[in-house]
Length: 174
Ligand code: IDP
Ligand code: MG
Image 1 (cartoon, protein in one colour):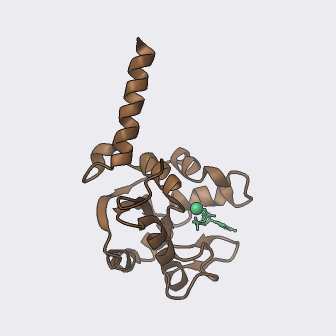
Image 2 (cartoon, protein in one colour):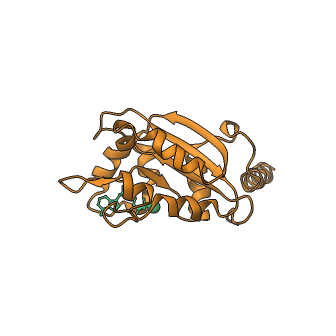
Image 3 (tube, helix red, strand yellow):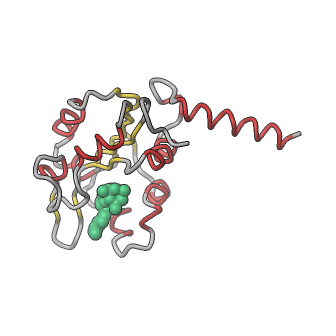
C-alpha cells in the first residue's frame, strides 16, 4: 500500500537550473513554510542511470535525452542536485501544489515554478524542482534516491517492505 495518510512522505529535488540560478534558499524557505517534517536532505551527483530510472515514465518523449542532461547537470554546469524527503499529512499533494504545473508558463504565478521557473529557447524547461506526483510514485522515488540509513527516522511503509522482502528472501533460501 502507498504511504497515504498521516505519515505520507514525498521526494523533492532542487534541480540544477535552480542551483545555478541561486534559488535554493528561496525554494527551501517556501517548502519550510508548509510546516512538514524534514526526514532526509542531501546533495548528490546524478548518474545517467539514476536519471533514467527516475524519469522512466518519459522514456518515449522527444525531450527525454535533454531531460536526462538537465537532471545530470550537464545543461547548467552543476554537478549535483539537492534531494529532500518531507513527511506529514497530505505531504505529496501539498508539495505538488506549491511546486505548480510542470510548465512554468502555465503554473500559478504564486507557485515555485510559476514564480521562479522559465522556458528556455530550444524547449528546455527550467522548472526549479521535482516533486513526487502521487504517494505510490513517492515511495518508488524515495527508495531510488535514499538509503534507509540516510533518513532521519524510519518510514513505516519502507520498513514493512524491507521486512517482507527479507522474509521472502529467507523463504527463497530454504
Ligand atoms: P512533473 O515534473 O510536473 O511531474 P512530468 O510530466 O513528470 O512533470 O515531467 C518530468 C519533467 O520533464 C518536468 O518536470 C520537466 O522538467 C520535463 N518536461 C515535461 N514535459 C516537458 C516538455 O514538454 N518539454 C520539455 N521538458 C518537459
Ligand atoms: Mg512527474
